[in-house]
Image (tube, rainbow over all chains, first blue to last red; front, side, top):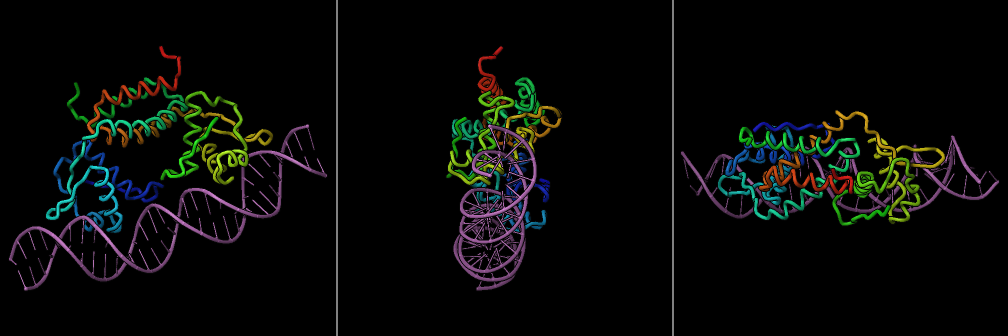
Length: 128
Length: 128
DNA sequence: CACCTGTTATATACATAGTATAACAGGTGG
DNA sequence: CCACCTGTTATACTATGTATATAACAGGTG
């Protein structure tokens, strides 16, 4: 999977890396069991330090998106248990996001359409 | 408006302050034209440094939530022009949030209901 | 003139981010 | 056994961001 880092962004490199991998999983470009490049290889490809990649992998592991096999290395393994916990986590971030949206004059309908459209992109052609 | 800061959070104090003020505006606890406490007064109330409050006010001013009147000080003034720009800004954050939600097993319907519910809270009793 | 506003300047302390070099334990294949 | 790969850990260094503290300034008010 192609990773693109914006070095002029105020968002940390390891955070951008995490987000892109999560986006990759959501859009099925990364599938369960798929092996990620080794920390050294990924670092060389992007042009960053090995430890920065290692930090991203460590965070992804702690958050339940990745596991490590001594033999193969890091691979995708999504922990989707704890549905209630996930709902609570996402709700806090969503409140801030929607507050800003509402202040900016975006209506509930605007946001519902946006969620609908993005989710359909993630689900691919499996629209119902 | 009551401000509560979580000093053990990994989120910066000035960022928490910004978010709570934006949430205050969205929930109509802060209305257009309303004067915010002075940087020194707010700092004393919360128990933080004056410069931390000043940074929050500066960010809010740059993002178009607050203006400064030489006479009165900082007051709420929401810039809701540039609707398209706001939509683009919010979309980027929403993509990351929805990606994580989808990975966690939350369906489109789950998220639509959540958005619907939070927006209704913000709109208060003006549900249609 | 005293007092309030935001703003700016300096300095310090601390945490995080990123890089660099090096080494280690575990697993694989020749 | 040995070279080679994996993630992981340790140490050191630089840079940046956060938060604090003290002080001063310009503009406006009463």
